[in-house]
Length: 362
Image (cartoon, rainbow, N blue to C red; front, side):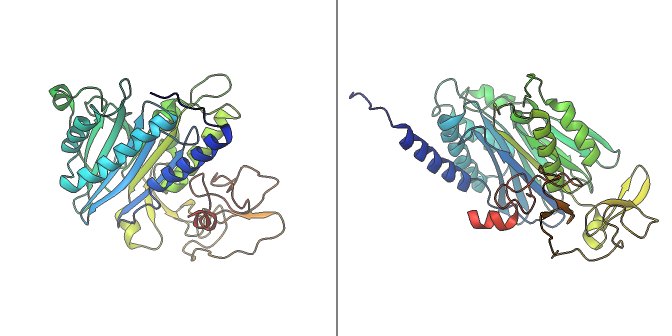
């Protein structure tokens, strides 16, 4: 075999940039709009290209697949396995949407195809939209974090299973478990990779599951995009200037309260008392007040679409607050959305880009 010539650094960097663009195109360009569901996602690769994968698969009008996966390797090898996993998921859901069947078929292929020593963990949730039933499987992945609205508690949900690509025998088939849950109004869940919980600061302290659960317990009833923006902000504050060691992916799905689907003024129950959500900034207020405690707009007022900005002011895409960019360089002081890295005049939706900048990059 002829000896391979080393690739110049500038060529390697250019090709990595192209690979990163291709991988970005493989991730969902938008979150599906499903009546009764609120969904969002956050993705931050460790290097140019990553080994994390997430997807929203619209199987048919009655079924939606939500998947998060993590490849053991990083960089180019991890990205190649991730691309295989995405292709297989898309193909297999067309044959049978059931999570256990899909996991078994994907494992039989990957176990003989990916390099020895590599493996893939995956959590897959099938949502039956008319009945709002969750059917799920975990292939050695991190447990789901689940908010149960009726009891106001956070729990972790895991199913038996082993990582994909390790064993091609019946051992994998026998270990994989399928679990069902009734997805009731107000319930929500998070799927994520271990890059979130194992993110470290300069003192080598991990972000840990307890921080994620604590924040989720506090904000589980808020919009998924707002929660993920706050989570990414808190994660950035915790890690500081410490280098990122792993890819980070988080997907949130929430079933809307029934009255929130019918009324222009969404209502929710917190600690047994009735509250009302402001249409302008989405702050939760006591039911007996007439003006929002945050933006001071009348409760029930129409959302503000256009705001006139003064010199140095930034418009928050979430709560529509105007704030001074120099005084708050990291983002909105109210809802914690980070600053858009593209235009620096708006906040980002999920820690990436505001909508105008995102459209320019498409």
